[in-house]
Structures are given as structure tokens and as C-alpha cells.
Amino acid sequence: MKYRQINKSKCYCITMCRAANAITSFYDEGLAPAGITTKQFSLLIHLSRLGEASTVELADFVNLERSTVTRNLKALLERGWIEDRAQEGRRNHKYAVTQKGQEKLEETDALWDKMQEKINAYLGEEKAKELLEGLYLLQQLQQK
Image (tube, rainbow, N blue to C red; front, side):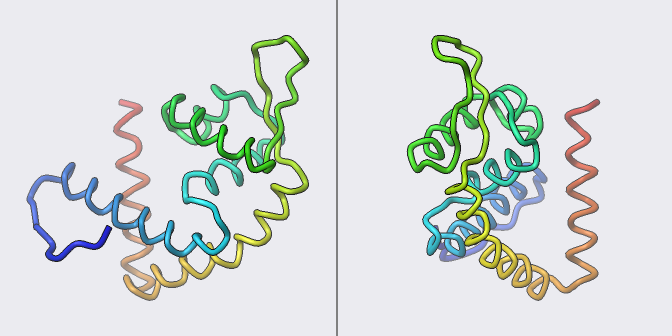
């Protein structure tokens, strides 16, 4: 979504939400040629790092609501980028990235790097580093 104007707010929450929406749209547009969204890419890459994980394990690892993870896993399953390795008739699903999913990650990697470089150039290296450090600190609010 493109905004006609930027409405500034002194509220950290509203400003962060607006920034999160803007950056997600930015990455989604950059990843569109590969046919994958930012959230799908994130789950795919994190699942590849874990090797195999249940919905709960993956949700905990990426710090997202289980329902969000479930919805995005469904899309990854439908595209054949992941598989469910649960034993037949069992409810505890275990997901893993398929060969097709690994190929999608390789295809998407260059697009992701390009988006990262654009953000770094837009903010400047020092501001980009400070932003990440601040965001890491803010994530700790959930631990308190």
C-alpha cells in the first residue's frame, strides 16, 4: 500500500506499526518475482535452519502467533516447498523443507539480499545498525 502522506505520531506503537507495514510491503514487492511473501520466506528459511519442526516449535522460534504460522505453513505445503513428516494418523505434525523449497530459497536469496542492500543504502550503514540494535532491545519487552 502506498501512502499519500506520512502522518507523524509521537506514539511509539503506532509509528512502529506503520513502519512494519511499510517495510513488509517493501519486501513483499521485492520478493514478488519469486512468488513468495515475506512471511512465507521467513518461515521457509527458519524451518530450513531447524531441519524439522512442529507448528508450535516454529512459532516459538520465529516469535509469531501459532495461527499466523499455521496459515503460512498451509501455503508452503500447497506449493510443495515443505512437507509434513508426521506419521499417518498422527496429529503432531512435523514439517521440513523439500528440495523444491530449497530451490525456492536459493532463487529468493538474491532478491532478499537486494532488499537488504536497498534498506542499508536508504538508511545509511550507521543508522541501519542502530535501528537493528534498537529493534532487538524492543523485542525484549515481551520477556519482561
